[in-house]
View 1 (cartoon, rainbow, N blue to C red):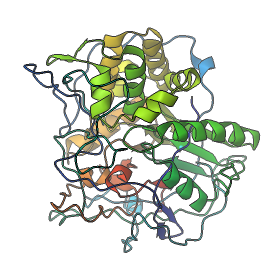
View 2 (view 1 turned 90 degrees about the horizontal axis):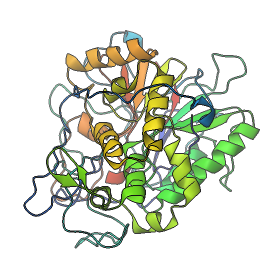
View 3 (view 1 turned 90 degrees about the vertical axis):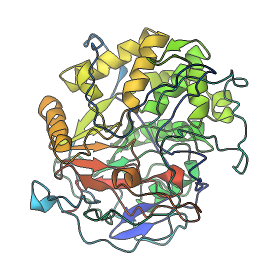
Length: 457
């Protein structure tokens, strides 16, 4: 299993939305697309196809599951309460609908909010590379953009201001954590953290709002349980700082009787590939690509690569891909690719860990490609069916994921001026109430989400 920590601009507490004071920036449509990395095409080489809008159904032969890898991981599932965003379609159970929306606060301004009792916390798209970029991790500056930001996928709009929501859809709802009670004696409250992407200051602010860390960034949540859903690096200024905080909190939480764990995200696979394989050519299915080029085009930060040490690489390569906690199936991507690697959570985790241990560029690229897929649960009919397929196979009553920014799931469109950030107020519940999206769009200047599970009914 894993250990983790995150960062974020905004949090939900007792019905209040707090904005993080971080460095998230709003980007114009022509500059980047926050949740979907891509590799630049080589001159004369077709670009890498990446499915960013349709449900994921492809299933290539899985890596042989199984293997003595359980000892490499630690931790496990457990029970607790949390908040929500709701899809306008009726949920299977009326009790799963969220409370009425509350006016959202400025996502980049931290406001006072009464934190709940000490808790327990937790896509890029491949593309053919362009002309060999500078040294690993040295992305060139983009005109009009801060030096620490690197352009990302160009096939998705960047959300700067929440545009009118299409009729029939409603914006996300304010997430209100339930009281810190536990369904299992001896287990503290369960928390999950969405995509962090290097925004360390926002993460710290969010964790403090939930009473998980103190002013010195030390764990104070006792036996709380914290899960990070992956994507710790790229796009933001301090991905390595995020990883180190997660590792630190893992040790401190364990000593206090709780735990802090993390899942593998597609950006972890991307960073591992860039570190291990650099410009080694890989067959993208639409031409030749490389991890180095894909990483740079998906927000890879030079300072992260410079600080990436062996113990960081070992930690990332042993992260689990999925977990079950209090009947919540936790994954990074809203994709069905997990089914390609086994029929149990343990088999999937072992198969992916073994694949990374083989240190094969082509095999690692295939993992990255699959984890980059998105929107498998969004379609009105196919979406709920895809979620049920995952739940029937791996267990749980709801799936909780990051990866796809909530504004994309809601079909919001970016404004041309990019003067305001998306109005994300909390997690988004959709697919007949069976799926919870946790990527609040911190890379767009929106929120870094933390929620207590189960979400408040």
